[in-house]
Length: 226
Figure 1 (cartoon, one colour):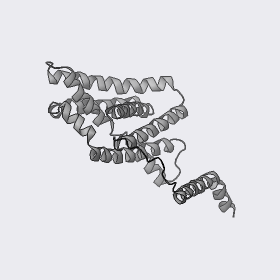
Figure 2 (cartoon, helix red, strand yellow):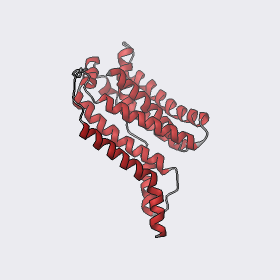
Figure 3 (tube, one colour):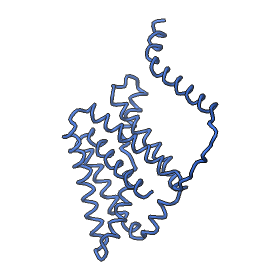
Figure 4 (spheres, helix red, strand yellow):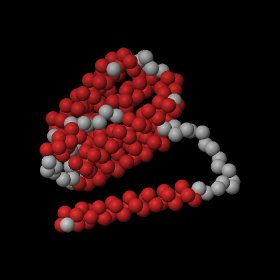
């Protein structure tokens, strides 16, 4: 499970970098400075952590379930931001929602930095904690700003970056759900009855959603002409 959580953290870092690639330089620099200040100011709490304590946090299923809820909510907001950039909002309410989504860069990067800081302190015994935190703070600033530039250089087209951003957030959501399940592997019985009623109901709901999604625009245009 620890490996799944670490992969989830990697996708969070990549998603944050892609998110900053849509903003101006001063916005990326400001967010990087906030992240650097967070790393440096939080180190008194980071040095109180232990390896067994961090492993216990990851092993705690209830804590992972709460984290999965928060991850799902944040992914919903960030996906909403990606859709808000596809077309310009026309109403005042839509413009306010788009502005609010733009002002929310994401908060999952801060627990990731805290975990990285605690792990780095354990990996460098004998080194002053303040120096380690200062170096990590500078590294976080350079990493976030540099990755934002790198994403903009590798993917100069905004539409393509939006697609990558959407896919990254989708992986974050999936990994967040996977991380919240029980690690124990249960073997299903050899002969288990198939819940045909539930299967038919699921397929029916999926079919209705597919039809509505495929013909929603046509239905909307028909109602307007009507």
